[in-house]
Each structure stands twice: as structure tokens, then as C-alpha cells.
Length: 480
Image (cartoon, rainbow, N blue to C red; front, side):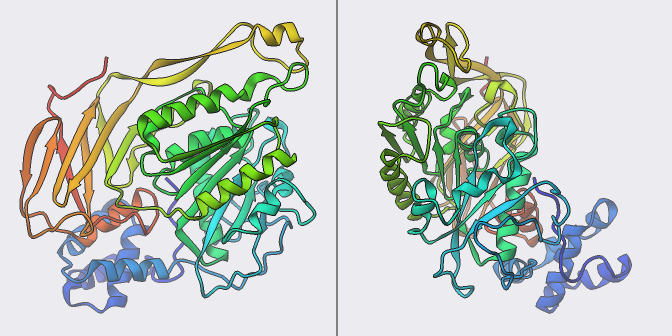
């Protein structure tokens, strides 16, 4: 989860007692005061935060209006000059000076106007652990005639290519801090430009393709679509991409004896394509005849098709099928089994011990190496299998208005976050939980729950004003 943002106005400048006295009258308060109390709650911790719960729960006014006001109050400076392909640093008040070595390279289409929201394309660069902070520049340079540059001229998106988090590893886009870093990149772009938060696309090439396989699952509720170009994965549960369209571009000759090892062999993409088909996940697989690059003519057609495909996608915060898994990702070399507690309107609050079988690619023969012989190359192979990992899973469906069907594995306690777009709060809500029917009456939205749902991801479009906590008995489904 990203750190708490720096609010431009109305932080905890008032005395605690004065805040609470005013807060207790929220039902009759002016909108500006309601927003002030909300900001105070989001900035507070400990006793101050607890003391504000009651007035926020008691607020009986329009919640959506308050949330919209809070979103509009986010720090913005849409008049900033952001030259194309010139290195930029973080200027957002919360992140300025935080990522000291990070550089951002932008491409802003000439038709962009601050009055009209525009999509955002984030490109994670390749290059391995030794790639410099400037590695993303090539994707947005004006002189490039091949690669991404010609494609981004024809889509209604601002493109940003940030530096990868520093690490002595080629898993730099799959580190524990990567999710918070990418969230900061989104916030920085929203600070500079009028970004449509429901049209954010996350793409990656090579090392960035590894990141796309992992981070598009971990951030499935933050993005509209994902693109993995010449990437790979170790083990994964691809149903975690439910509701998030995913594109893969890969060369049939990605690996070549003596030139390119099989770290990103086409087997990975073909296997993912098969697994996505079996899971019924919306996806696009584009295989070209070339190798591991973006700068050959045979790749251009696939790139153009992929960007046209993702440009039409929009995020749906209320997508009726959520697969939440903790942990989730591409688990590159088993180093990235990171906590992923929330996804859209589902939170895994408490887990039980147990494992889940996930899809995995195992290598046979000698490990790939640079400048290896043709004989060593030929002795290598791949096998698609499964691997048990310690994890919990929630598969939740909104099958009809006010009716949910939920299946769990290794879960002790979970939450469904409800919104008027999903349920009629004047009617009972039915949840079929692991085959057992439960009926809940008198559920109601509160401003308090809306703010708590926002705190999960710091995304104002992922706000659900009613939390329904479900306890799973010991006889609930468990993995082996």
C-alpha cells in the first residue's frame, strides 16, 4: 500500500477536542467541514483516528459527493511543463525527494488538453540488473522509427517510462517495493496531467515483461489492462487476472543458440496463453517471427495491434467476478511471494495454514547461460507443471444484484466491500459462502467504511461504502 498522501489543506491543525466537537455534528455540517474531518481521519493514527470513527459512521448525507470532493482536492499542477523524452524527477508533494535516483521519461501527445482526461501507459524497461536509470528513454525518444515510439503516436495515452527500482537482480520490477513505487508513478502522472484513473495500462519489455506478468496480477484492480513483451514467469495463478485484460507479445525466435539464452523462451508465453484460455481470461496473444527485441519490422505490427486493443479497455471497479489470492504474482524464482490482501471489492483479512497448487514452469537440462554452445542450448527444455505454495484464495462472484457466491481456500476471515452499484441496501443481501447460504439484513453504507476502503489502495475509484465481514468456520475449505 502506498504511503498516506500529503493533503494540500485541512490537516490536523485543529485541536483534537475542537475537531471532535465539530465532527459529532457531521449530519448537519457544511460539505467543506465534512471533507475536513475526512482528511483528518486519513492523516490521523492511534487514538485520534479511533475518536473520529463515531462521527464518520453517523454521517447520513450523500457519500459519493464527499468522495468526489476529496478526489478533486488531491494535489494537482496540470500546468507543469513536461518535455518529451527529457529526464524528469518526482514533483508530487508526497514523493518529491523520495526516489532520489529514479528518472521518468514522458511522451505527451500533441492533442492532449488539460480539460479532457487522457489514458496513461506505464512502460517498464528491460536491461537486467545493470540497466541504468536512463534505460526507459528509448521507448519515448522522438528519433525512434521502430519499437514503441511510432505506436504511442496513435493512441490517446500519455506514456511514462520510469526507472526500475534499484537491485542486484533482474527481478527489479518484482521487488517488495515495486507495487508502492508504481503507485507513486501513477500519482505523479495524476499530479502532472489530467489522467483518467480507469484507463491506466501497465506494460513491460524483457525484464519489464517479467514485471508485467507479476505486477499486473498484483495490481489487477489498479489498471485497465496489461502488456507483457518478451517476458517470462516462474509460477503463477493466472485467474488472478480475472477482470483485467492481458496482452502478450513474443517472438518465436526469442532464444537463439550462442546469442540469446532461453531465460525468456517463447515457451513461457505460449504456456501463459494456454492457461489464460483455460481460465477464461480476456487476453490477446501475438506471436511474431522475430526475436527478443522491439526494433525489427516484424514486431511493429504486433505492437500496433496490442496498443489498439488496450486503448479500448477501461477498468471496472465493480467487475462481478473477483479472484483474490494472498500472495499473488509471477513468483519469479520464488523471491516475490508478497502479500496481496486486497483486490477490488474483496479483502482477505485472515488466513489459515495450507497450500495451493499454482501453475509453474520448470526447466530441464543445464541452466541457460550467455554464449553457450548449441549443444548445451539443445539440451535445455521446459515443462508446464504445478507447484504448491502457501497461499489463501477467495473466488467471489456477484451473480445477481444482492446475491454473491463465494468460495474460499485457506481463509479464516474475509470482507466483501459493497456499493450501490452492486446491491440495493434496502433489501437483504444473500451470500452463498462455500455452499452455505447466509442472509444479511440492515446493511447500510457509511462514510467511515468508504474511507477505510480507500485506505486499502489509496485509489478514489476503489471506494466501497459498506464492509461485510465473513467468518469461515474451521470446516471451511482448506488446501493440502
